[in-house]
Amino acid sequence: MDLAPDSTGGNPGLTALNSLRRFARPRPVRERCDLCDAELAPDHSHLVEVSTRRLICACEACAILFHGQAETRYRRVPRSLRYLTDFKLTDELWEDLQLPINLAFFVQSTPAGRVVAFYPSPAGATESPVALEAWQSLARENPILADFLPDVEALLVNRVAPSRDCFRVGIDECFRLVGILRTHWRGLSGGQAAWQEIDRFFGELKRRCS
Image: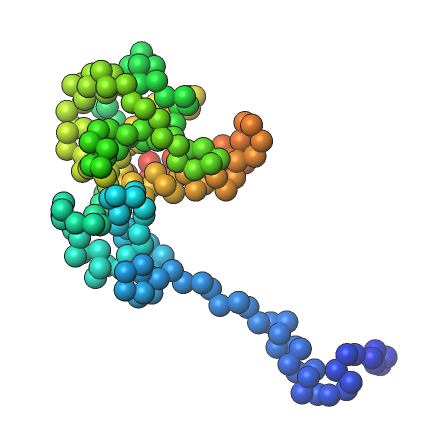
């Protein structure tokens, strides 16, 4: 058998070490609670820092401290999802809301004292003004909007052709969508991969609502 020279100089200890390195795998990076540093499960709770709209990863023990609390620095994001099959949003009313694209989410912001709209973009979540009269008309048509929790729940609207979907979701779902778009968007139009990922996101969201 032909023995090729190696960089270990024939040292069996080094040869064994090199063999082990080939099979070594980096340890998975585990997320940790931003408040107590406990290790988090992949499916964990989130809090919102109200003043900054910053999303906080939290273990269940920390998250429960802020459940239902309205006058605290942090608020717990609800885990419930709902597909709003009876939501009334005509093409005309959507146009009156004056959003630049057909994908957006709306949040009642306590610091701003009004409803704030955002749409996902390659630069992140981009804020867009909401025409007050149009929002009031939408709220009259859909009384459920009065039940949304400020700062932590959002109306997520997907009207990218041919979709006409509306969801009641925690704000963390909206920022997950923003992250997907930022990761996969290419060029001016986004590219096929980006739109496939967006379609996959909404398909999964519908399944989780059912």
